[in-house]
Image 1 (cartoon, rainbow, N blue to C red):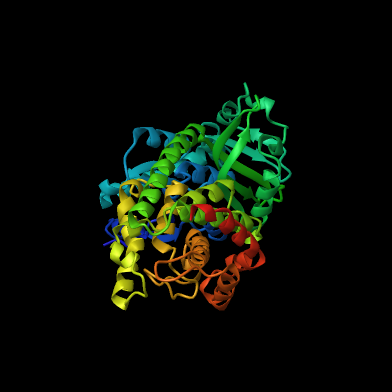
Image 2 (image 1 turned 45 degrees about the vertical axis):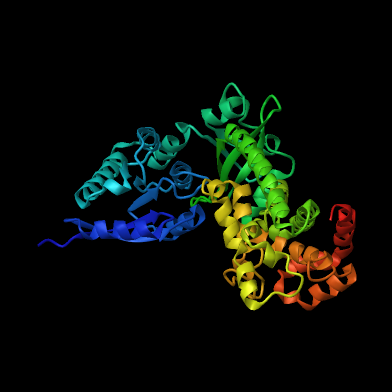
Length: 475
């Protein structure tokens, strides 16, 4: 029996299960076998390919990330001059996606659930042979041709610029997206003028550290209208001494964002009524409580937004969304017996065990809305706040005993907001503490809170007192 040919392959895939599946398929092939290396992010993939020139094949998951597709990754790989054959794998067959990827220079397109060892081996052989013949036939740099295939024919916008933002190249889709009649109206201009003020400088700062940058951006069209875009920037450092370039791909998501805004508005309305109804049924606190929690939460988030550690995570929308999400933090108490919630003296351990179920009960109640959350930031925040707002930084919280950064940021913020309001508010078994007393109690329990959030509270505790006093008439 002839010895199998071993091929070095890179698989760009976010689900480890499929890496195992493809490894198994590889072992069952008759004449060749893959030695599969695995990466997930574009940055890791590009770095790996820079260091491992022995890679002969790339297997690319079309849905490797919830915000970009395999097409954008293929474009950035080609922009770096990496001309290894690429086989695209996806979880669901789509003729449109297949045609798009093949036009962009992919060698083949496979549907994950339908791949046999024979089909996989045939696809690899065809990809390698096509690549060999292609390289032999062209009389100019195959790197240029593959890059041209991946970029020019793309339906999403692509722009190549120097590190100062001067635009060297755009494809027709980019010109159309920005409202220009052709590419030449844009070439020679500067990317700074196509984005909101200061945004390009932020991108450049990130690229110096991470080489890739992905985020939703607002673009300024020729007619000065704003468009929402999902973007991916990568720094292309050439091996031949040529000056570095930045390649960026853009997907117009304006219509999707408009639909999302309308849906979020509906969700917020439904959930605010839901929160108020839960308070009314439980008769724990009035609407003043949930609106105070929202005010504390918004204030903390806005302060954290000015912290360098959070500047790429907390934006204006996050501040708004977490305020609305915080209003639902105790919605699970709707299913907690009133005789426990309104008990006029301290609870027994058994009763506390029932109380501690309310985070999970809350998520169960909201599941009809949360099950379709997808990448919707607001619904993700609702879920994390409801489920984890009683977790503590030192691991002493519930329901899962999470610790430190394992607790979602949104829950860490609401945790302190809820603690303060609980201390200064009257309960069925005690009167509320004064602001000064609450401040001292929280200081003594400093280890339970994210140190950065605790510091925001410590530095601005009088603002918390002001919010409480402002809403005291509704308590």
